Length: 280
Figure 1 (cartoon, rainbow, N blue to C red):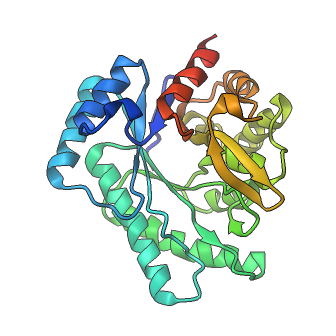
Figure 2: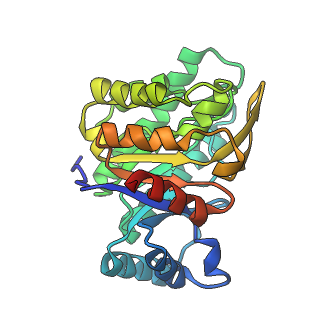
């Protein structure tokens, strides 16, 4: 896997900025430049529906404006489904997201990989690994030089704590974690919210996978409401207990580079808030 080389941490919105209104992707990229943000995550919520003209436009405008793109696969993904056809459909959706990423120049794709479905964790790990293996092989055979990133998840019923995703990343040379800090915070009932804990995440990734994982980083952040079962809903950062200021410090301490995607309801405002805090 060719490493992407980033010279900084880039601040992205999850989808088109709200200020885009009813405008197109072209207008969305203009808004991002106007706000001094660095790019966006393409959100394929219900399916990878993007025509060739739009893909070409995104690639051309992204390059011209020197913006960063990532992509989020549709939410209908479960590599541990009890039904084989749903596993196959999940694999196909992730592959389609990878093709769209290649076509638009996005460097990384992410997705919620699976649910435990009340099965043994080791059994589920092997099932997820099997699906990722098919996706990884397809990417290599079809020259899709895009990072495959299972995302850390926000509920205990969902596969994907940090250790599971690090373990999986060590088995494939084109797989890395997508660290959703809000999900980790919610999943573990308020943990993962101090400077030391954030540093611990980066230290673990660097030590177990390698420094390149911190120089090609892809993460998510938002305010979040949570309860005993984990994530409830996203909030704006100032309306939540998410300690984004210390996270920005930890990013600087470890010289993390790549992309952090804001998933707050007010995506561009919180993305700008994060970037302002980071730049100090």
